[in-house]
Length: 218
Image 1 (cartoon, rainbow, N blue to C red):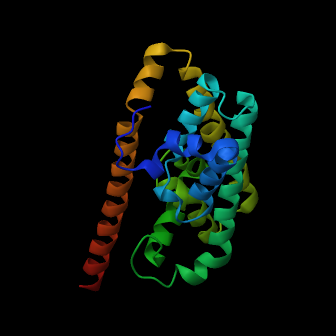
Image 2 (tube, rainbow, N blue to C red; image 1 turned 120 degrees about the horizontal axis):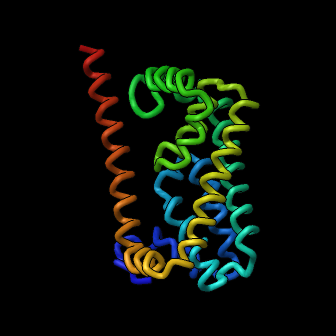
Image 3 (tube, rainbow, N blue to C red; image 1 turned 90 degrees about the vertical axis):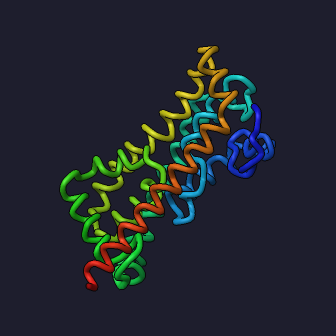
C-alpha cells in the first residue's frame, strides 16, 4: 500500500503492520476509543475496518479466521458504545448541560433529545456509519437519558452492522481484484478524504452553534 506520508499515524495499514502480534488488540482498542471516548472522532474507524478485513484475506495479518476477527471488532464497538452511554448518563448532565454553546451545550442536548424522540433507536444504528456522529451519539443518548435497555439493543445492532459488517466487507473485497487494487492503491486518498470530511463537519457544527448562540444573545 502506498502512503502519502501526510498522516502516517492515521494510516490503517501502517497501524496494523506496526502493531505486529498485537495488531488485532490495537484495532479493537481504536474501535473502542472511537465510540467510547470523546477523543475517538480523530481516529480512522471506517477505513480501519475495511483494511482489517482486506488484510485478513490477503496477508492473514491477525492469524485468525475472519469470523473471529469480525466478531471481536464488533464486540469492541459494542463495549465502546456502552461506555460512551455511561459517560453521558453519569457525567453528562453535570458537565455538558451547563454550557451555553459548543457540541454539548444545553441547547444542543435538547436538540439531540428531540432527534432521538423522533427517530428512536434507529439513530444509534445509523450513527455508526457517520464519522464524528458515532463518537458523540452514545454520550448524547446517555445525556438525554434514553432508556438503557433500548439503547443497548440498538447499540448491539449498530455494532454488528458496522464493526462486523464493514470488516467482512473488506474481506469480500479482496475476492474482487479491481476493487481490491483500487482500495489498496488509493487508501491514503480515501483516508485523507474521510479526515477532511470529518474536520469539515466538526467545524461546520461548531460555527453553526456559535452563530446560534450569538443570535440568541442578541
